[in-house]
Amino acid sequence: MKRIVRGFYESYNYPDLEAAWLHYVHSDAVMHVPGHDRASRLAYEMEIVAHFDDLILTVLDQVAEGDKVATRWHLGGHLVGAVPGAPVPGRYVSMTTTTVDRVHGGQITERWVDAEFTALLG
Image (tube, rainbow, N blue to C red; front, side):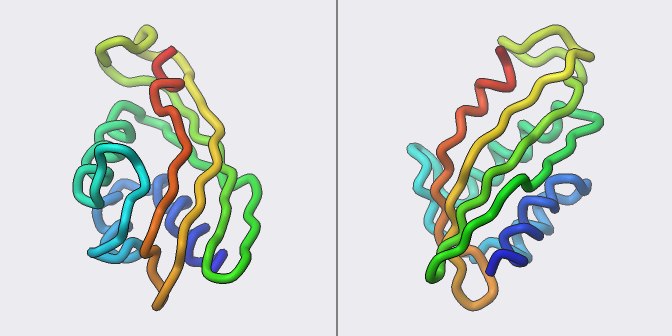
């Protein structure tokens, strides 16, 4: 299970996030993120990733119990172009957060994301 979740997070380092979600996240996956279902969460994360030209996501720690994997990861890179409410383009921004993913049948079926992506903008 940890291998599946690690692969998912490391896929943010490659250009085709949509293909990664098709591979790693079940089409009926439940997103425990206020205001997001699978499609809107993918769109949101693709928008975030598009604002970086050198984004690096690094898995720092993982713990698995039962069918859940907790992952602490770091995301960072230099901003590209003007982003409303964001620091000056070219500035390095980063965040570290922890998520919990439920895995069943080789895919993520539930995600709890306790991340404040606006931390990237401050």
